[in-house]
Amino acid sequence: MRCETWMFLCLLVGLAWIGQRQFLFDPGSFWSTVIGQRILTTHDVPRQDDFSCTFGGTAWQSHQWLAQVGMATLHAIGGLDALVLGTAVLLAATYAWAAGRLVRAGSHWIATGIVVALLLLSSRYHWLARPQIVTITLLGWTFAQIVDFENEPAVWRRLCWLPPVFALWTNLHGGALGGLCTVAIVFAGWGVAWLVGWPNPLKTAQGLGRLALIGVACVLATLVNPYGWDLPLGWIRLMNLTSLSKYIYEHMPLDWSNPYQRGIPLFGMVYVLALATVPVRRWRVSWFVPIIWFILTVQRIRHCTLFSITAAVALADILANSRLLERLKNLAHDARQGEPESSVDQTKPTTGTENRLLPWAIPAGIVAVAFVLQACAVPFPLVGAGQAQVDPALTPTEFIDAIRERSKPNDPIFNEMAYGGFLIYYVPELRIYIDDRCELYGDEFISRQEDLAAFFAQLKREHKDPAPYDQLERWTEAKGIRLALVMKSRGLDYYFSSVPQRWTRVAETEGRVSPASLPGAVLYERKPR
Image (cartoon, rainbow, N blue to C red; front, side):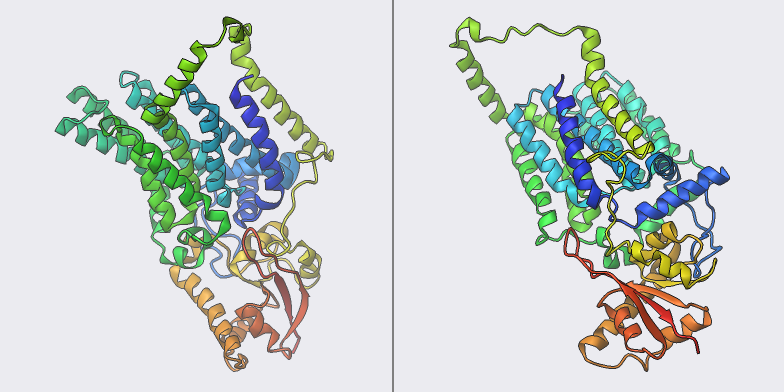
């Protein structure tokens, strides 16, 4: 079996184990699945918000509708277990493919192992069962076509595949915007290099024109979606929201003190050092793409997986041109020349059919069996039914019965953003206050919500009574809100607990520390007047 097979199986086991606890940490996993279910039911994409009591009926587009359909399909097979397994399979396949590129480029198995280890360490912070996982795979593939074309400029078919892939990518996840930027940066770099006479894959002006046509086709491919221009423009509007980097953890800058993020700067340093072992005259335009993604990762941690996969792809090419590895190979070759002939491996080569099918047949068979186990509700370690675990601090499933007993269909409920996905998935008959579809709520609404929580937290630190500040009370009463789901020991919890004549504490969960600190959840009920 090829190295990709062994790598895939090892990664699948490890990722399935990690995923049981981590992959369902993001609330987007839950509401994305529900949207996919509704698309399958209605045979149409959503065009307005149907979940909130604050923006219900407002125009809204699901930028990830096709991936959400995929998530709903997996969920129909095996529930949350299938979502976790599907995420693990896609990640394992992507990383095993990256390892295979390193091996085929001539990298030593030790160097390959180090790169894969760094790839995992720098990516693990953002392993979540959500559409962004598809962007990791597609960006890696897209960047690989660019790198390979730079090695073999005559093979234009590699770049000709980009427009149809971008048409698919556009409907899967907004990360297609990052892919477009990557293509634009490299294509522009090649154009400049051709104009000034630096080494580049373009030989003639005709090649430059062909490259421009492919770039335009990639841009036009983003219009192949149910929303037309509004979808790519929505990506840009979303990324321009100032509230994202201020309040949403995945959009915040790199936290150098966070142990779950320390692998990112380490991989960045290793990448730069590897680049330094290649003579400058051999440097290529595409090798600077991971550096750009690293800078973006420092600004927003959500880009860590994209930096990691592009770095791993580029390193296969960089190590093949490294002076250091060339010397190591020469030393190893000299050492083998002194060995007796009998020590040479005489293993019989495999047939062509076996080479093509066996590396894929075994993993595909194992994955198929795992999904069958889940579809049949058969418990089995790691890949069977009943393995996925939701975090009670973020997904307080023990509150479901209490919420339903105290509410009616279409009742509004006050909640903090972290619990929006939980409520949409587990109690879809209610109308939530907010969730993490930030493009729907906008900067002003999100900032007002977060500032309100910060205001009451400040009163708590100053030991002041929040009861006189009853703007929240007037708003919830006017909306007919009888239930509130908030974070434990935070600002809003302080407010509701300080007005026992108005609100009753119904239930609470314990918090936890890792992989991200969460204080637990508290459910309140309004007292009848």
